[in-house]
Amino acid sequence: MAKSAELKPPLSAARWPIASRMPFRRLSLSVCLGVLTAACQASPPSESAHSAAGQDTNQACVILLHGLARSDRSMQPIADAVSAAGYRVVNQDYNSRGAQINQLANQALPAALKRCGSAGRVHVVTHSMGGILLRQYLSTHHIDQLGRVVMLGPPNHGSEAVDRLKNVPGFNLINGIAGSQLGTDPDSVPNTLGAWPADKAQLGIIAGTSTISWLSFVLPGADDGKVTLKSTKLRGMQDHIALPVTHTFMMGSDKVHQQVLSFLRSGKFSR
Image 1 (tube, rainbow, N blue to C red):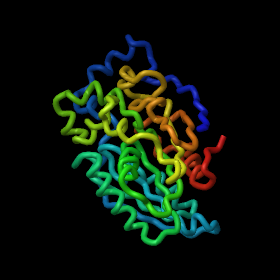
Image 2: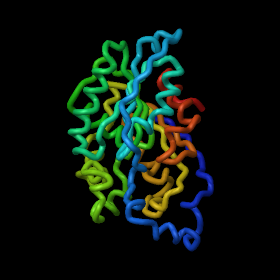
Image 3: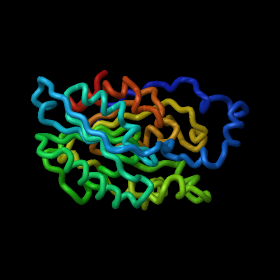
Image 4: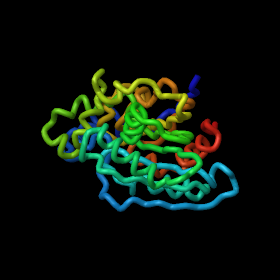
């Protein structure tokens, strides 16, 4: 059974009394429509390799997949931490707003696997929609030597924020068609992919419980400002942990880096 450790979120703008939070509702449409991420300028894919004493780190390749409307640059803090631990890193960029989720999965994963080359094992670390891309790909493909997977803030059952905003004019311009596929309805992509295939790889999930986003108004229960803690969980996962980090910035957290490395090494989070 998956283990869970939840930390109570600190007081933040999204937890203030409603009267003091009303100015957030007057944010511009361009800000309000940043549903699952804050846009980043794209940069060329980065790849780094370091040697280490451990057999797994010497032979393993770790693929990183960023989230919606982000670029590989958003995953660079994790790339640096994982590379420093001795793993070979493939920080895969893809145009997250340029196609549907199944098309993005069939573009990003084969490209990343090709860059891994003949690595002995392949681990994957994803943020947000990157986890849905991996689930989509594994629903129709097999990855040889797939080791362990860590998902950060994945909308595994969709996001209520998408439900509220996907019909607002300009939504697809900012989030692409893939963004509109991340709702909570039964036909949304996350809800049609089923349980995690535990026979293919061990899965660990890190959820955030802090928020600085007005979107917490439409998210039930604990959330990271974009995705609820409940939505991150997935049947078949090996482990689950909640940390006081936000959806947008969790990739830069030292606590997150430590837990990612713990799961890659041992198949469980450190408590």
